[in-house]
Image (cartoon, rainbow, N blue to C red; front, side):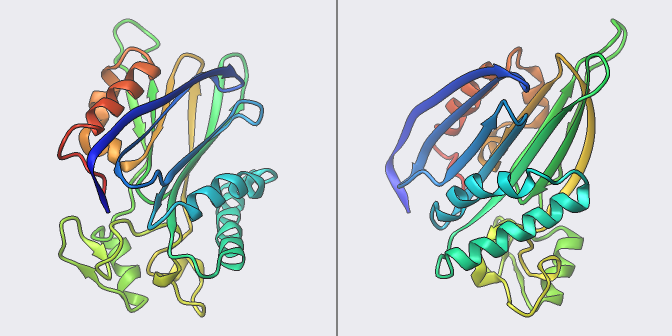
Length: 260
């Protein structure tokens, strides 16, 4: 359901710690309730974004429980198992919920000198961007990005159809005419009890990346609504992360930018 008037009040927080200087911004927009959550844990050097749909139960649950499942996970396969375990716990604890959530999570590890290693997990259509500054005057900055999971992507469509699902020709395409992303925690009406998590129409298994960065590079996580109105290249042009967040919130509050 869409509100008659956009709620543009923005909650902006800043912090400093193991993640470096960090900021977060939240805005309700056109929704009747706020369905998104985030984690910014400077002690654990962990940051995450959860974009809920059909209610806030799944996003709220995963924002609390997924970091606990990830606490002792070190490898890509262990992170994928943590997502599966969180999805199973969500089904057990809230068996009747229709809600689901996408999730993008990053843990930052210290390396030698100013070097950093980032373990990045993406499930759905939230996105992580890593802006790597140029090391020499003649070099150009580079941008790394996670890949969104959309139903009409060939590999995603193949899995959906093998599970008995359909990718409808809506704009955007949807799984069984319902969901415009093809991976999520929750969304159990699109999952079958006798199938493995990785074989479901909507899978909870993330893609996991390892990125290398240095102090001074920028890491940006955001829900898909941000990137519906801002291209990756626009994000790279902002001078400071909190400036980007404020700009993004303002753009998403404009008419016609409703995040479906």
